[in-house]
Image (cartoon, rainbow, N blue to C red; front, side, top):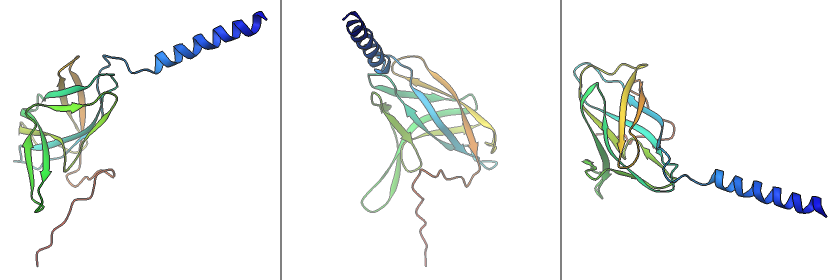
Length: 165
């Protein structure tokens, strides 16, 4: 009789520990995955940074600001396309919301970090230091891979090519 009761207690305790360990912590730090930017030719001082943000926390966070020692200014932007197919870029002045437990993609044709005032061309194979600041928790410092100018990620929709006749 003693063994089944002990097993029940130990198994129940283990189950509770497992559930607690798998629950999203309230204040987990957001994570950056697959950050990249295209190389730039000499004289070009702007670029767009793409990545996936993951918020493992049980509460939402908002990306408020980005910075890099290699650029004068970075801004959070999004691209929208109207009914006529015209794309426009606009600043996300209130930041970028990353819901609790969610991934948010910054990808071509959508959200991105716009880079202004590059001090030097971005060279393929090198890295760009990037600091991201959120409304809660510590800032994240990461490195952005500089890809060839014609790089297009396999997960992004293919760009539309317009042919004029």
